[in-house]
Length: 197
Image: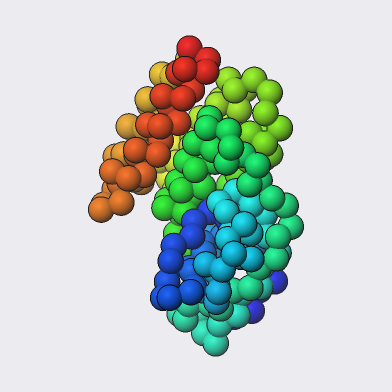
């Protein structure tokens, strides 16, 4: 397998002494994982921040092998890390994407929605506006995974967030990592309450 594309960094975890495994969301192949040699270096850490857009090259001898991955920064959203509400939002949507979607299956609408949502958060403005976009993104992701018909429409932001939490917990956010992932979401909800309630 060889793929050169633009991608959104969704998750990064240490692997070995100096490397990382990065999970990136691509338009054409969906979520893909790759090993970045030297990914923990001072040069690579600012590039491999969830939410950043990178020029990525995946290389593997077979579809079953973890790809070797090289990345170059295309667009940095690292500035959002200094804003607690925006950072919590980026943490949540990228972690959800990395956890919920199966690897190697294209979800072009989800990729486009994630990119648009991250851009809206980056532009700032009224938190309620992009908080509604988070609800829509969660709803889209649930629908893409086959659970969208269970969601009742509501115009109340926090009610919609509770509804989505229940659907995500029932169908998507499960297993040993569920508690940590839901804690990321709860941090976001608490900050949204302080900002717009």
